[in-house]
Image (cartoon, rainbow, N blue to C red; front, top):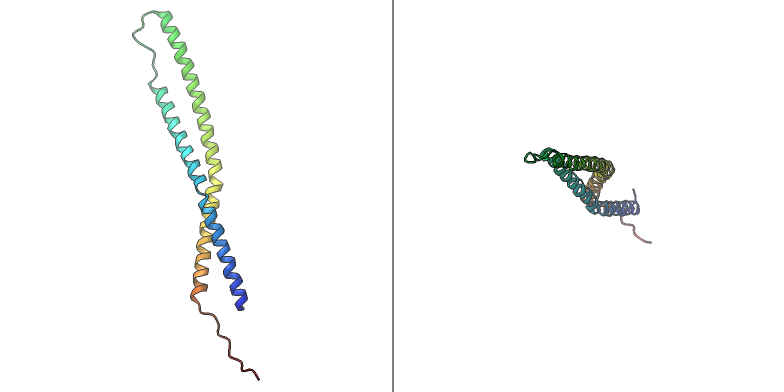
Length: 136
């Protein structure tokens, strides 16, 4: 391998490392997706809590008031179930979106480590010394 070829390989490795670093710096998108995911988990937890705690008022003795309250609570329960279904669907979509990003990030990190080891070994190995030619 000539000196120019080594220089070209070194330059290509440096460009690849810079590109990998630029991609890794885009990780805030992944963090944002994970934050949205955790917010959805929290919303699901709250909806489940509301569903488990919601009860019909026991102090109402009037049946018409009780029926009205039951209808309101059933409506709220239905709304909560719909919110839960939407949240679960959004969570599934987030998982679907984050999976290729995480895979690509892992692949780029592996490639960056390989490039880094190749570059370190290239920088450690001494350049070939060409014999001195006497001019006539």
